[in-house]
Amino acid sequence: MNHSAEQVSGKKRWIVLFSVVIVTFMSCVDASIVNVALPVISGDLKVPMSVVQWTVTTYLIVISGLILTFGRLGDIIGKARVFRVGIIIFTLGSLLCGLSRNIEFLIISRAIQGLGAACTMANSQGIITATFGIEERGKALGISGLVVALGTMIGPALGGIISELKWEYIFLINIPIGIFAIGLAFKVLPTVKVAKENRPKIDFIGTILFMITIISLVLAITEGSIYGYTNKYILISFAIAIIAFIVFMITQIKLTSPILNLEIFKNHRFSKGIITSFLVFTATSSYTILLPFYYESVRGISPGYSGLLMMVFPIALSIFAPLSGSLSDKMRREILPFIGLIVCGIGFLLISTIKPETNIVLIAVYLFIMGAGNGLFQAPMNAVVMSSVKRNQLGIAGSMNGLVRNLGMICGITFGTSLLYGLMSKKLGYTVRGFVRGQGKVFVSSMDTVLLIGTIICFVGVLITLSIILKINKERKMAKLEEVK
Image (cartoon, rainbow, N blue to C red; front, side, top):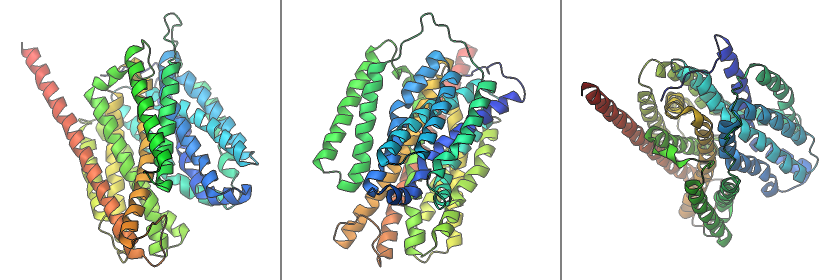
């Protein structure tokens, strides 16, 4: 379904895009920037790694748990209004994180940051889709997708550099950027007046149930990778997540103004696009957690050089994402995700063959192929998803996109590490929870298996994307027959 652009003319559309993506970049960087600094924070605040890890988990839980609610709120009171409030909360949370002197205060501050990030992530794609006409939407969403990917990938490298000075600067660097973003957002973001009469109410029951689902699920996935998925507390957490989700779905069917209108999933482009995006983020996140160990522990490469090698994927993505966004405005946009996933799958297949002695340049070529495929996939698929829904569903559609991205990252990282250590434990005959010195070959063969599964995940995405193309072809044939009649 096409959407006419909001009343934003000429160059101002691109200023609106810039206003949105700088906030998106900050939010995505902060999802991963802390990872590298965890040992430094742990030492400075004198707490174990198992406790300081909550600074990462809390941020992801709050975003994933509330992103649907703020997407719905954006549809009710205006996406720009929720987005602006989100920047203010995120910037305040960043300041509090930088001022933290104990772990409890830091975790609470990260939750505040996550609250602001959920507001902005839920409404960014909706604002972009509403601002740009159909002829430029692919390019705009391509730039947005590029920023998301770069923010996620650059985070660890940036965190490593900044934390060598002082870990608080990881958060304080957001303050001047946040203040600039707040001023720009209030000046340029188009405010659409939403009539107060008959305005739907926020679904607080659904919000609470979904939050319980996400908290239980994320805890079960992340802690299960540490304590084992047969641990009784992990199983109880999975059970709570399933029960809460079932009750949540029942309420969403019965309520007149749910946070997630299930009617949206009857739209095959939306539902299949969301599933495919989740699969791709799961696959790509699994490789990002494993390859640094290969570089540093197996090959003996320095962390700095390893970080540079890890930049090959985002560099390729940064080249092909804007290109694919522009191309999607000139051709059938569902074709590009199909091609992109095939290329990404080939890259995964190639990298699943690496050995301890494989030429580093060859690995970089494989990563470039993966990044190129991902770049061809992301922007057009975002355009397919966001252009397929009604205007009053843009907030919830954008928030679903953000939710699957976050859940895909969580699942990919935990899936990658859990499967890797499980395979290594089986081969070595004892439980493994990390890299075992002198067992490089066992690590690499286990990693190759994980990456091969990533290949399979990509090609499942290819099949789903093909089904979108075939269904659209069928719809167009039916439409032509109707015209003839």
